Amino acid sequence: MPTKELFGRWLDQFEVGEVIEHWPARTVTEADDLMFCMLTMNHHPLHTNLEYAEDTQFGQRVVSGPFVYSLVFGMTVPVVSGKAIANLATTDLRHTAPVFHGDTLSARTEVTDVRESRSQPDRGIVTVNTTAQNQRGETVLEFTRAVLIPKRSEGG
Image (cartoon, rainbow, N blue to C red; front, side, top):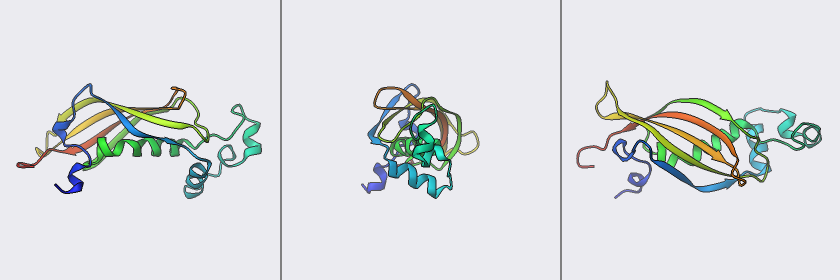
């Protein structure tokens, strides 16, 4: 079996109520955050200036929220959207606690809906809720996403 067949899931492999623990967890480094900020032109001093950040309510630099989302999203790809035709929507995105350099994030996803497409019989939509926690078990991010997933082909 080609390796690409092992990446992701077909529509019939998702079950409503299933909880997926994503592995591995990932420690966020200062380099990760600063590189992401520079690549995306996010020069907010809360992310890039230690002295500025020390005078905020956090007392230190906070990891850029879009980086946290991108990292957690990426953690889900091998299981949730590895075979995706398209990511249709991300909704209800909430940053519920700050992430700091050195925090280790883990993610879990719950499948909330699986349905066949009404217009194209070879695919369907999987809806999931993903949460990320830091090493202290604090939820730092939540979001819902709808993904267009192919059905397994005949003989596949």
